[in-house]
Image 1 (cartoon, rainbow, N blue to C red):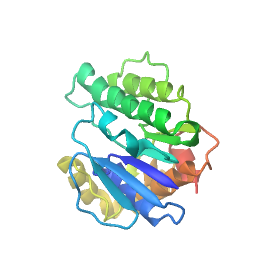
Image 2: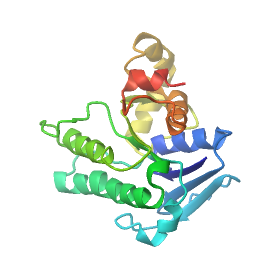
Image 3: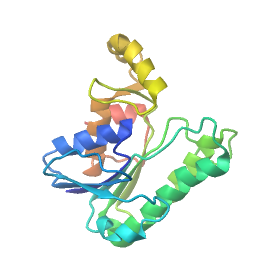
Image 4: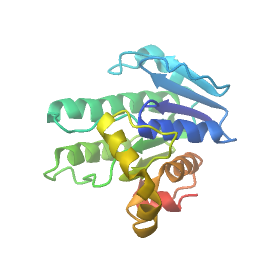
Length: 221
């Protein structure tokens, strides 16, 4: 199975990359990055591409892909709707359209979105409307499947780090409480391991749903 990965440097991208590297069914991971990570693995191929507004120059990297793990995203905090829309919707759909053209109905597109996404596209929350439109339009494309992951709260382990300094500080402070959090509110949180396993299972066609909330993610083993 050949995997196309976006956002490998972010927390969810790190989870996806680790899960794909550990999965025996994955033969190659093509990670599209703005700058090389210098991580080496026999299954990993990094494609360095600075302009995420236009992927046409690396179109060949989208060929013969079985699953795309699209983990690229930003927080909407302090961001206007136009800028957030461009990063969240335009870049995602640009990559999706090229994948549709190059791999078509062979490929599964897995999009990491968020709990509370607004599928109606009409709510008050700007980020939720934009995410909802992105989800809706991805599902209109001619993929084998388009699966939306809405993970909400993710409990990372020690090997997964957030790029956002303040988030990482919070994770470090509350890490001793992770087992209790997981025990008492299991339907509101998922772990890095559970999310990684669920993404790989969805990539292999194990999901019967197109939108996976936290409960669905935790059940996909």
